[in-house]
Image (cartoon, rainbow, N blue to C red; front, side):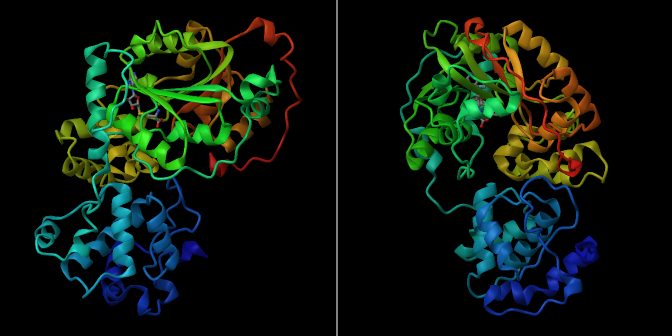
Length: 470
Ligand SMILES: C[S@@+](CC[C@H](N)C(=O)[O-])C[C@H]1O[C@@H](n2cnc3c(N)ncnc32)[C@H](O)[C@@H]1O
């Protein structure tokens, strides 16, 4: 049914222009929309754009709610709404409407990532405040306030390369986020048991673990972990003070007690603390020597402790590398305007171009995410054999992948419960976008004493697989 409603772009824009009266009055004066002209945002569409059957019914209260709630991550919807915003800017209605308010909220969520034409920029100079609100923030600059916050330092910054990465994240705390997902508390021991079929003994330590989040950035994963696993203590460190202050502000807002430090992972070799659980996602691949950082991290894990690591996949990131090269060649700077132009450059790539893969990633839809994805000054990627070799080097045992429920089910159907990176490698060759976000996996510091009683494997559970979700 929905496939029949799909129109081509020129028609969409003609339609949006014809909808000006509706846009101007918002939902207060509803204009009947012929079904053949309706564009729908798929009501369940939340993340990567997997289908093109999407876009806009400006009369839809669901659309307005969606714009208030979440960053829109569909390039077609973005184009159509950017066109609608332009209409509203160049020929504004007499007062704000539900749509203009929703577009202003969406702008604040995505950090005003949508492209702005020179005509719009000129019109904005004299535009009323509620029109400008769709293009720029009128709220207090919380990040400027954050910069005044005192965060204790544990170490110096080790190298020039660390200093350069630090500088980037001082300018661009990442990720900027607004709320935590609806995680239900679940004991970590239970999660690991479901993943591996092993009992994680003794039950006590994983029930109320001492948690370290290395490179915690702005605190999203740290506070998600805190909410889900209810650790006994939460410690985080990062190079960037601005990111840490952001994390502290969010912890205060959500009511979590956290201990935060500014530190360079590469300088923590002598730290005398030990943790039951360490989370380090999206960090090691930004180090000049990821293995050195990983070894230091492994030393901070107590025997039998577990670590959740997130690393970029060479296979899944191939398209991003192509887009990064294009952006580098363009010479665009990482300013808000440069970031908007870089996004436009990627969105205008022809269908099938590998660089367009970026538009499947949530990061592409905010300015800070775009900077992190397309302008990073230091980034490496890993293959499964790289991961296997690194784990051996740092002395950790692979437990299994954390991300991607559908992928996990497929693996289990094909290979059972025994987790082997070589088998995951085979699966990734079949589904190269399987780890588009990152490889996120659990590993463990062996503790021979505990492991003796913890090796029972359950028979694999076989279920029907819906490959569409992979
Ligand atoms: C891509 S962000 C990820 C933030 C967070 N882990 C998350 O997943 O939301 C990378 C973070 O790693 C931090 N980082 C990079 N190198 C580091 C180092 N040598 N020591 C400590 N933190 C580092 C950066 O400052 C940045 O906040």
